[in-house]
Amino acid sequence: MAKQTGRRLVAQNRKARHDYLIEDVFEAGLVLMGTEVKALRDGHANLTDSWCEIEGGEAWLHGMQIPVYAMGTWTNHTPRRKRKLLLHRDEIARLEQRSQDKGQTIVPLALYFLDGRAKVEIALARGKKEWDKRQTLRERQDTLEAQRAVRERRDR
Image 1: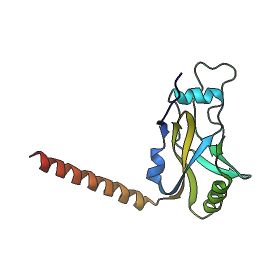
Image 2: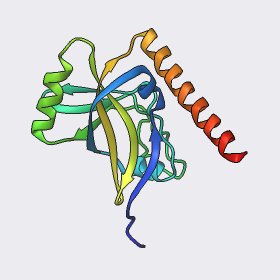
Image 3: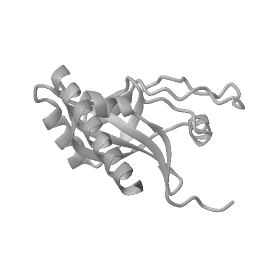
Image 4: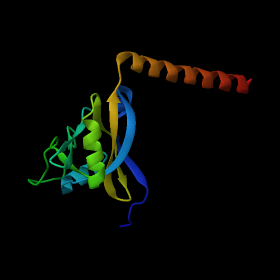
């Protein structure tokens, strides 16, 4: 079988980009069981309502759901278990220090395969207020309307 190359997206946390202001992004590996990898290769995962914590000098991903692999046996995994993230020691220290600040949290943004290895993109984020969310939606709507007007003008 040929080795996979490039990036293949499995799951994305679009809600995180809406609810949080992304400040710093990191790429981390995951410690997974065999049936979890097979379920991910089938494209089954859910990052909604998941978060990261630093416990005892290690980074852990909580709340991510990888459904049970259909062809698995008694060795199948638990769908919502906490999973260890693989980061460099200085990255973990930086995340731990900055996540202690008020309003800061660590959220996963995307889960993907990079050259055949499962990776998760995590971000140090600050929660948005309700008016921030409305302002972001308004800006996005304004840019879409401007693009639409330019396209209609060009098509005439």
